[in-house]
Length: 512
Image (tube, rainbow, N blue to C red):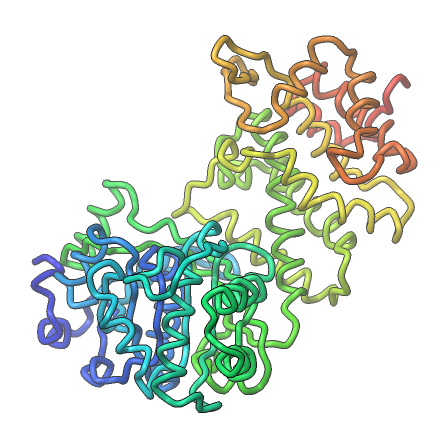
C-alpha cells in the first residue's frame, strides 16, 4: 500500500511486530502548540521528530501547524498523507548500528502562506500556541522593508511580525501570551538577529511603542544550534529497500542519522515552555550555548576542513572511506583530539570534549551516509579561516609548539589548491591521475601563485597573507618550516606514503 492510504485507522491497525513505530490514537488529538515556518527535511528530521518522540512519552503534548511559503511540492504530499511521514534513523551509537523507523504524527496540518494566509493569522490568535520554529535557509533571516498588511508579507521576518501583531491584538497585549521563538537557520546568533530585524520592521510599520514593548518583554527570541545530518529521501535503491522493509510507500520518507543536537539559549521560563527537552537527551536549553557551538565548529567542522585534502589526495572519496583506512582514520582521530580539542578558544571540560569527539567519529563512520570530500572542499579557504585559525592561535598560546596534525592537514590543503585556470574560468586540480574542480573563491589566487612561485616561496606568501587568515601565520614559531616539510613530502612521495612516514618517523623540515 502507499502512504496516502495509510490513514490514522490503518496506522493504528498495523500488525504487531512490524518494523515501524506507529503513532498511538491519542497523539492525533493533541492541541496545536507550535507554528513552524518551513517543510524541509531538517525540520522533519529534527524538531518535528523530537516533538513526536516527546508526545509519545506524554511530555509536551502538542502538535505543529506548518507554514509553507509557496504552493506545490511537499504541501500536496502532506495533504495526501494526513501529515504523517516516516523518519528512518540510520547510524552508529558507541560503535553499534542503529536502525529505527518511526511514523511521525506531530504535524497536524500544513498551510500555504500564499493561499491560506488568513488561516495562519487566525491560528496566531490560538490560546494553545506557545512556540514558533523556523528553518527558512540562511537567506531567510534578512531585512526586507515591507508592510505587514501584505497577504502575505514577502520575508519570513515580515510574516513572523504579522503573526505576533495579530496575537498582540487578539489578547490585548497580555504579557503571558508571548511566544518562544526558536529559529534553526544555520547562522550564528540566529535568534538575536531575527529579533533585531523584527523590531526594526515593527518601527518601520509604525506599530506603536506599546506593541514594541510587548514584542521585547513578552516574547523570547532564542539563539539555537542544530546538528543532525538529515539527507531526506535516500537514493532509489535504498528507498526501495526501506519501502520493502516497512511495507508501504511514503513520499515524505526521511532518512536521518542517529546523532542529534538541538542546543537552545534560554532561561527557566523557556525550558518550561519547551518541555519536549525533558524527553530528548540531545535537546539542551541553557543560558549559554557557546560550548556546543564551539565543539561543533572546531571538532566536527574543523576536522573536516583539515582532513579533506589529505584524504582526497590519498584516494579516499568519502568520509567513511577515510575512516576505513587505518592511517587516515588514525590521522583524523588524532587531529581532532590531540590538536583541535586543546586549541578550542573556549573553556571545555576534557571529558566532555573527548565524548563529543568520539560521537563525531561514530558519525564519520556511518555506513548509511555518503559524505564526499570534494563536497566538503567547497570554499575551503573561507572555512579554514573561520573554523581553524582561532584554534591554531589558541593552541600556540597554550603550548607554544607546532600542532603536527594541523600542519600536515594545512600542507595538504595547499597542495590541493594547486590548479590551473581553464578557458571557462574554472580551476582544475589533479590527484591520482584524475582532475577535480577547485570550488573556492580563492582558486585563481592559488593557481597564480603555484604557476610562478616555488613551493617555499608560495608558503611564505600564503602564510604572510593576513587577509586570508586574520593574522600573519609566519609569526607562529616553527609553523612555516613544518608546513614546508610536509608539503615537500606530499609532492615527492604522495599522500599515502607521507602519511605512513608521518607515523613511523619524524618528518623532515623544509630545506633540511
